[in-house]
Image (cartoon, rainbow, N blue to C red; front, side, top):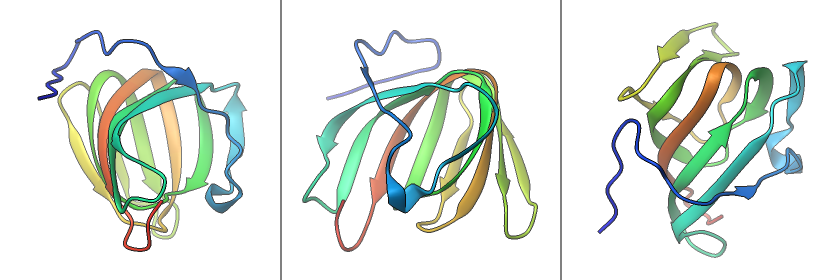
Length: 123
């Protein structure tokens, strides 16, 4: 069983560069750095569960898979780029984002999230 709650130490994470061509990352402000870990699923699977962390900055990307996320620490704003809808998130807040959504991540304070993703044709 894995259990995370706001403020928990999530353990070691590895560097995750902004290099997935399908995500089409565009750094807009600052020098954000990401790290993470897949705790279940991953390549070859249709679901994955893990931890993701990002330092302050702003970037646009195309989300890969339907994803339910819960913020464990930090603050951010997600902007849906096709319609301008925004969602401010902090510890304990959850959000669902659809596969293929083009979003802007505005990371105000370094963010750590737990996520559960699903991609019908696999990751």
